[in-house]
Length: 167
Length: 112
Image 1 (spheres, each protein chain N blue to C red):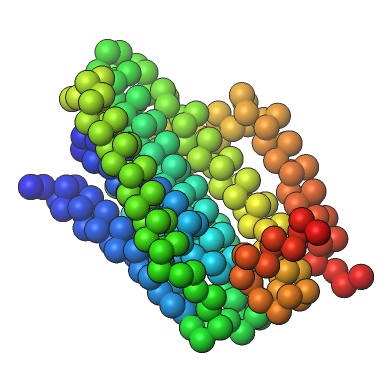
Image 2: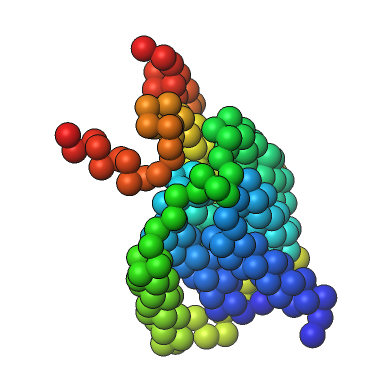
């Protein structure tokens, strides 16, 4: 078992444990903090796959900006474990069973896919995740979607202001 | 690293997100579970792009930029997710201001 495999299994265990803790935490602030843990574990996976640009962007945008926004909203509303609305037990059980069935169907599908046998994801080698290659592609072939993105952000900003303002 | 490991990890994270959406009633936690699902798909896209690269490089040593598109798609998904979060949280704040709760069952008032 080499270092890459050890790191892979450690990061996977961290991601799954943190994701489960997001679900079962009663306090919304704890859920947000565990979700930051999931995002850091996924960033670790990106570094392991040599996707360095996405690892940094994931950390800055997701673990930084988006989760701070979530934390800000949770603290603004003064939510805590006492005010947490609870579904009844049967609804929770039904949700877990249906999610588990979905997972079972997916796993059996992947196990039957013979195309995937002996396919390997390149870890720690391969340069496509470097900012040089991504930048070349982004500003040549994908420059139109990139510009449309700015319009999307503008509309999202205006929408957030219009929804959020007091009438 | 065999691609199946990454698929299983993404599937588990995605299913945890689905279970979260189905079982929690706090609108913010439901929203966070949607982010979790988006991230599991992002991880799978990056793993598949590296799988594609490995397959291309095994056939042709010069094909060193195959699969870059997959990582750019992840970048665009992050952009869309950031825009989605800003609007969604504004909606949740408005819901809280009108009902003093973030219980998603209050959203059934929309039908009146």
